[in-house]
Image 1: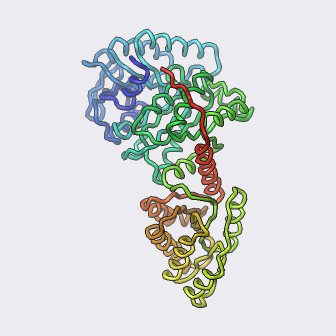
Image 2: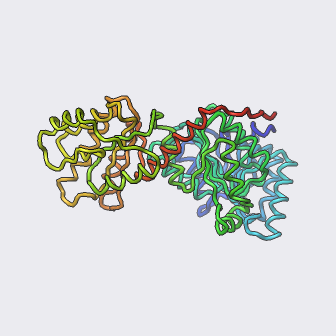
Image 3: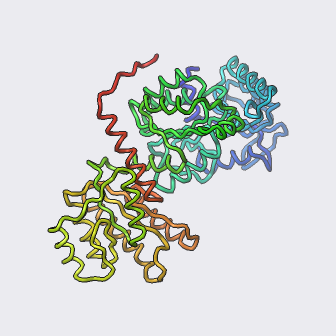
Length: 475
């Protein structure tokens, strides 16, 4: 099967078989996730004892299934995988993902030999392998998922991730902030399908607008450079490199068997290809949110609004540290703003503006300041728990009302920072975050994260506006 066509099958299978389904097994967890996610195709649980589960017949062997299976999920012990691959080849199965671990990542010669053996068997049988030691595929359009609580709606973001746990963490964190996915894959040890295959596929995928990636090591540096160059020429690509320190590289080797290589070389490679680099999963989410929801500002002049003098000082530091300007309010505009507030207490008439005033005055202040030619974007700064009095609970809601109205009325980019470390405020925090998300605003969880992401976003577009050398397409 063509390498790209096999990935089409993995992301849009008509049928899925799960090997190792029993009452208290990981195979049963995969089965429940498929059922809960609304998978549209046929599901075939497999276990030597047969029987029934969740209203589905359990087949003793994949060879007993009366039709070829598109996608097989392996949850059996490593020692049983070679025979499972042989059986799948006899069935005519097309792609297998292996949740099964115990291969090269364990650092033993036995594990490396077993991984080499299953790759040989799969190649001989025309079967593509994802993994081993991975979660596999999440494709909301197909209703295919390995976790029940992932969003069922599709979106424009693809995520390529060598770690299963990081895949789950990233998807959940990003989904809370409005991100929806085209295709997600946890690919583990990459004994067959690797990061280069996935980048090449996503370069041609019409459903994908932005690509995020977590990579611990690459198999073929030359091919990786070529396909990443082609992908980055078409779509934004944001990469988090795991194991960039010597200590992290040792952990990566024991996690997915990855050879991390020189961090300096990897950094240079990303710069040359036009991909963006980040250093944490939280930064990765911030960048995806920025690309998805923030219109490109014309410059770096920030109008900031929010409550609390101390928070505004720290927010101003974050802006300045990332190359943003907070211009002073022009004298004529300042006179107009003073008329808006009419002597209300608690006002700092400066940039940042606190907005501790009536709803109407807050709206007039924020919208007038954002609309002014002296500003390029607005950042709203909302820190829960900043004020000690109960009456300030309503301030968060009023602040949200004001920003949403300004967003609807003023045609300039806007982002919102909303943060809390207080468990007592978590539900209120999530409810307000959802309101911002539903309005299509980029939401950040710290001002430093927001400024860093928007700075990278601006530099990305500045670099792309320069003459680019042509990347030669490969066949």
